[in-house]
Each structure stands twice: as structure tokens, then as C-alpha cells.
Picture 1 (cartoon, rainbow, N blue to C red):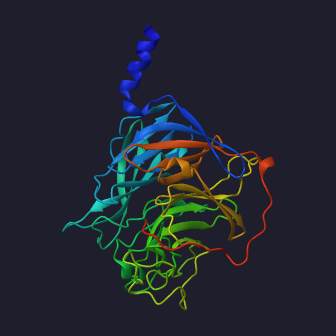
Picture 2 (spheres, rainbow, N blue to C red):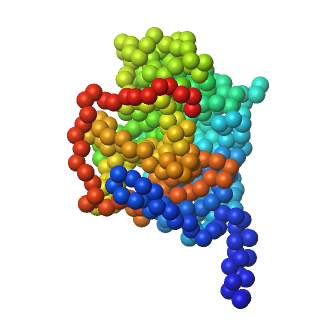
Picture 3 (cartoon, rainbow, N blue to C red):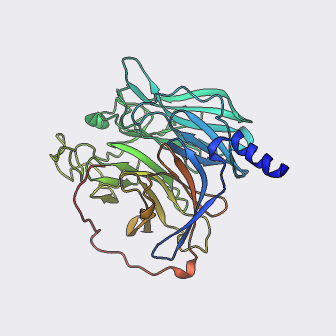
Amino acid sequence: MLRLSLFFLSLLAFGNNAIAQDVIYSPSSLGPLKVTTVVKNLVNPWGMAFLPDGRILITERPGRLRVYSQGQISAPVTGTPAVYNQGQGGLLDVAIDPNFSQNKWVYLTYAEAGTGGVAGTAVMRGKLNGNALENTQVLFRQMPKLSTGNHFGSRLVFDRSGYLFVTLGENNNRITAQYLDHHQGKIIRIWPDGSIPTDNPFIGQANVKPEIWTYGHRNPQGATLNPWTGKLWMNEHGPMGGDEINIPLPGKNYGWPIITYGIDYNGQPIPESTGTRAPGMEQPIHYWVPSIAPSGMVFYDGNKNSAWYGNLFVGGLAAQQLVRLEVNDETIVKEERLLSELGNRVRALKTGPDGGLYLLTDSATGMLLKIDPPPKETRRSIKPPKPRPQSGHPEKR
């Protein structure tokens, strides 16, 4: 009786998040998938990062950073920044330093308020000490601040050389994605201390933001490093149709809003658009019409004996699905939609150190889910289709 009472007291101490784990089985082409609910009742969770000891950092968009460990979710970590919690704004992504075991740096992206009711994306870091961030530093601020609640991006990715990539939305100001004196609609590359690499593609050019790596993006909410090639991959929202996957190469223009496979939400062409192709502008390696509203992205590199090993996964917000993509070099050759029956907006994805695929669902009662990947022997051989398939009609996400 005493043990039972202590158990219920522990649940009250950690709120409604500390629960017995629920398990369901979801259909897939490779057999039933075991899906375990690890945490419930997260408030619009947005990003996560695994610590070396297996704990998980999780952001909640209203402005909280929490730590999951051994069935419990912590009280909010102190030392996080004040956030602009309007529309799509708030506390967004989280990443740890490649040398976290030595330096304890944790990196956050968030919407930061400016003057006159507008906001922009910012990057901050702090040293994790217990349940606190200390020695906090703002490393980057998107300038000018133009958002009134939309299109902040933003994902954080470290590459093998220790550079930090940050994806930035165009704040729903379309043409600024083409302006090199604006941070809107860009991917930037900085050092972990916020300094600017001397080999960035626009270094030394007048009236150009030196952090810029690529431009012509709309609202990139997914990014990951290909663990086999070391290249950065990313996804971004189109308008009504035209969501994209790109491999951003230095100095390249990815076209928004001049070229797009989508249309405006009123059913008309994007006013600035000249079509789907233009000289000097890059084509996506994959796109969706209708939109899935992509967010979160990861290559599965966990269990080598899994049929999913080497696959790319993308979360679908409007689609309320997990999208599995089979990849041949830099070509998407097959797509499968998963977890459709759950009806959850999939916001963020990570491969766990235990080989599980972890995902966050985006709602006021969001969840951390774990999927056990299917074994290799169920995998079927596939051949690349030609040309790349596209079907359906644009729809508003």
C-alpha cells in the first residue's frame, strides 16, 4: 500500500506527463510497427535532442525546455530565453554541441520580439547544469525582424566540421527570400560561438549578410545531416502545394518565390512567380503536390539490421502522417505514408541511441512516440521510377 501511494505521489510531482507507456501496432508495407507512447501532454513540442547519457531535451513552443529521463519529465529548465509566443512563434529547436560531454553547451532557436509588434528568429546557447542553462549567449538574430507570427523556420544542424547551420523562414514576406541583405528565407552557417566562417560563400561582398549559406527558401522546418555523405538535407513548406526537399549547396538560390510548384491560398499563382523553373535557380530533389506541410527530418541510421536503415523520414503536419522515403544516392525512389490512422501532426524526428525512431506530435496535448523499426528480412527490393512521380492537386495546409 505504501509503495502504491508513493507511486501516485510521484505522478503528481511531475504532472500529467509521467504515465504508463501505451503501445499500439500500426500497419506498414514492411509489417506491423510497434508504436510506444513515451510521454503525453506536452504543449506543442517542437524540437528534441538526445544527451549522451540517453536523456532527451524537449522544447515546448510556449517557451519551456524540459528533460525526459527514465519515465519522468522534468520541471521547466531555467535560463531559457523570453519568446514571442504568437502564431508559429515560440521556443523552437534544440541541439547539443558536438563536444557536449566536455563543454555542456545546449543551443536553442526561438522567435524573438522586436519593436512595433514584429519578431524574428534568434539562436541562443547556454551550459546545462542540472536543470538550468547558465552562461547564456545570444549567437544570432535574424535581421530585420519582419514576422507577425509566421514563417520562422527553424532547425539547427551541426556538420562534421563543427559548423552550425540554421534554417530561417521568410517571415511570410515572400520576396525577401531573394534579398541578400536580409536574413529572411535563408540558411545560414556560423561557428558554435556565433562567429562567421571565412569561407562562407558571400564573405566580403557589399550589402550581403555574411552568414548566408543559401537563399530562396520559404519556411524550412526540417533539416538533417546525411550520416553517410556528410551533406545537409532540408525540407521546406510550399504554399498550397510545392513542399520541397533540397540539398543546399553554398551560394545557391532555391528559387522562392520566383519558382515554385505551388500556388497561393486563394487558388491563384504566386504573384512573383514565373513558373517552376528559371535560370540560376535550383530544382528540388523531391516535391509534394498536394502539400504534406513537412516538419522534422532524419535519416535512419540506428539498427543496421532494420529494413529502414538508410531511409529518410519526414514529418507531415497537414498530412498528419510520417513519410518514409527510400533514397538511391540523391534520388527519392519510393515513398510510404505511415501512422495515418493516428491523426497526429508530426513535428520533429530523431534516431534514438537505442535504435528507435522517435517523433514529437504537435498539439496542446502533444506526445513523444517511439517506433521500433521493422527487421531487415521483411525488406523488398525496389527500382527507381522514371520520371519522379507527382499526383493530386494542391490543397491548403
